[in-house]
Length: 73
Image (cartoon, rainbow, N blue to C red; front, top):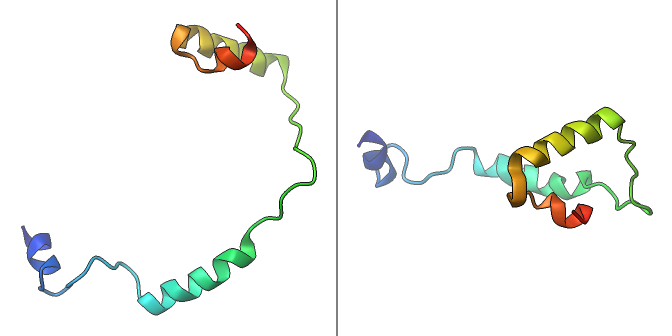
């Protein structure tokens, strides 16, 4: 109830948690930190143990496992 009172004009009239100027500064720098797209997809080396653990998880999920459509199973 106290939060509602503050949001309708009490000590805090809106739900803004940080200073607006600081937020604008963060937004201005957010685009600069974006990573460039990779020229080629990254390849991951998967161990036999990881594959076995993944298969066990798929067995637990059963027919609901979406991965089965990608594995051709």
